[in-house]
Amino acid sequence: MAQPTNDIKSDNALFTKTEWKIILLMAAVQFVNILDFMMVMPLGEDIARAMLFSPSHIGYLGGSYTAAACVAGLVGGMFLDRFDRRQALAVALFGLVATTALGGLSQNFEQLIITRVLAGFCGGPATALAISCVADNIHPSRRGRALGIVMGSFSMASIFGVPLGLELALIGGWRIPFFVVAGLGLLIVGGVITLLPAQRAHLVREGIAHLKSSNPFLNMINVLRYPGAIGGLSIALFTMLSMFMIVPNIATYVQHNLGFPRNQMSLLYLIGGGLSFFSVIIAGRFVDRFGSTPVTTVTTLCMAAVIYLCFINPNFIALPVLALFPMFMLFSSARMVGNGTVLSKITAPRDRASYMSIVSAVQHLAGACGAFFSSMLLKNDEQGAFIYMDIIAMISIVLSLLLPAIMLMVERKIRLYSKPVSENKQ
Image (cartoon, rainbow, N blue to C red; front, side, top):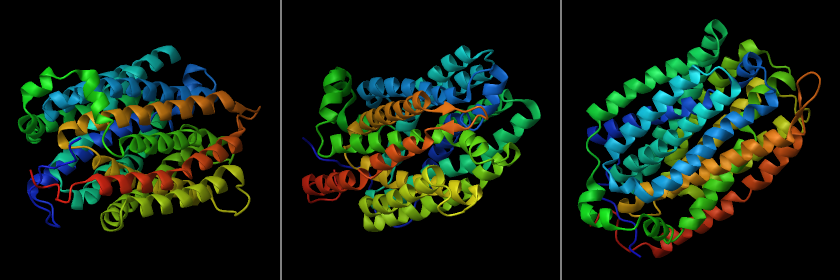
């Protein structure tokens, strides 16, 4: 098995202008992609009231998206590396824009579920392609910082997108945020087509004829033979499973269980997004300097403490909602930087989009399972408060605590099986 190589010619500490353009474009792609997914959960209470379904079913909206993205990721794992990444990304992102607009036109819960499934089919591959573009163009010694910037789009979506969507929903109804996100996504599609350089280096190096003649299923199996590949999928699995047992239910929980007012929900996401933005930048630097395992360990322990204080024993320390829940967003964002960096180093560039697509499939499958599991277990009392949220939180903590050991194993395998030459040599 060939070991990971990279086509980057320099490991200078500073990004070039071309690298900055690619990083910022991929951050924009991730911003609209993440916002498209994130906005549904905070709006879930508004949508439930408008469409007359139980708030405990909000998890099905997130779960349907992630389940579809899982299927798309598995299919993409067979084919994505056969195309120019720019063209494939433009197609996936346009599909996301179109299905999001259709979501805003939904007349009932069933139609909305269908449009979220279609959005998931497009959003999953878009994520894999965006991360692959960054990894293809940024030297491993600086990749943590680059991915920290790209993953900062999660924070920016929390700072600007979600609060704005919540305010727009108060003014004009829950449909308006869907149309605004679709319009923004259309602009970013244009940016990808006109500003992103062609991403064909993996095709030129390996030979287009070879890629087109290979068996798609065998190609996916070969990708999983890289040292650390299965461990990397385990990281994706436990990270997203533990998170999405919690994330879809936050908005309803803080309103009904903790008495947080609906008209201040945008402030909650604004503060959390602001903290997350700085955390991912700092986490990227720490990952480049110390590795992914220390960052994952620290952020996982901090997240476990926050989950305990939020959902299991909120009276243990009398901290306000505006202090606790932004900390959850901060540590979850920082942990994703460590995860994404180590996953980008497992395969060679020729297989990177395929592997990241499989990773995306596992992430979305785990997210769907977490969201569906919580929706099935949770009940609402007469006042609308969740029952059994403490059980969900405890399971989430246990799953999270598995991550540092798995991360350590994967990083050791990458170091052990890598050739004693830098990735920039061809």
